[in-house]
Amino acid sequence: MRKSLQFILIGLAGMTGLTISPTIAAAQDMELRIGPGGVGVYDRDRDRDRYRYDGYERRGPRGCDPGDALDIARGEGLRRAQVVRMSPRSIVVQGMTRRGPERMIFANRRGCPEI
Image (cartoon, rainbow, N blue to C red):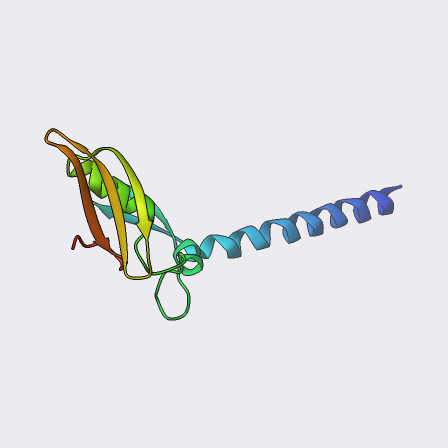
């Protein structure tokens, strides 16, 4: 009876040690940083997964998103703005201003510059 109790205790101690060791190793990718916003936890793996090997973020096509063009047009004062035409070189947004119908043309490049 005493020997079987000893084996059970040794087995439990061994299993507990195996479950604790991976958590200790995983905690090495965390850092505590002190900055103007206070103390924060920084996870190195999260940033590594977000960017690829070349450092650029992969979000899709590099052109102007029609939603971004609409947001810019609404910010400039166009009401009821809608995309009228989209080509490989430009995006045309049409809407209303105080003076009447208005149209804005954006280049189909990153950042949606207005033409």
